[in-house]
Image 1 (cartoon, rainbow, N blue to C red):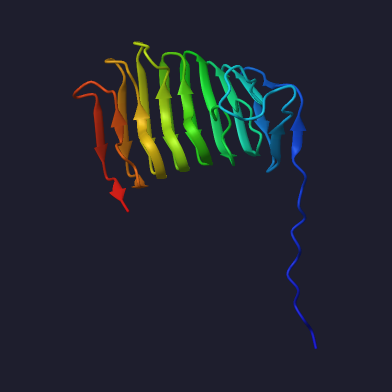
Image 2 (image 1 turned 180 degrees about the vertical axis):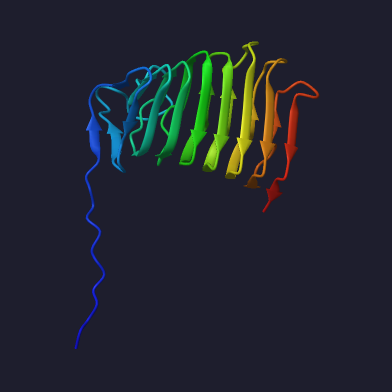
Length: 209
């Protein structure tokens, strides 16, 4: 008698990153499904402590794709100008998942983030962040503009699924910044927008579940 046996998935050990991986301007870093974790002694332990270093540094126009950042995640990804992040999952967000360090446009397409005690995406410079087809669960905020700053950040979320949020999906203190959430499913979210000036937010096609 012939017995069909399903192939056994081979577990691949995570790649331990001892020093920040720099992705040069205009290039693509394809993780090919690998998981990367920080060496806590050199990059940071993934706590809320400030001053941790990123696992990846993306120069202007760089793309990071097809990988998972595990725990410890240190300070995740830093973008020095515009960057594209495609199909990247943060299994256990450290200090932040991604920070915009210099003005530009951040495009997040696909992927997910889990267990972000504070925020997932931190905007420390003027710019735009576009999030599409993203999954986030057990987070403080999805996007946070650096507290007390007045520069303009344009935040958009589309076709995503967001649940178990402690504070809000989009958060700013700037009267110039704008937020838009469309075609997104959300659950257990206290408020979609926080800190925006009147008239600077919009939403359509969203579903609460």
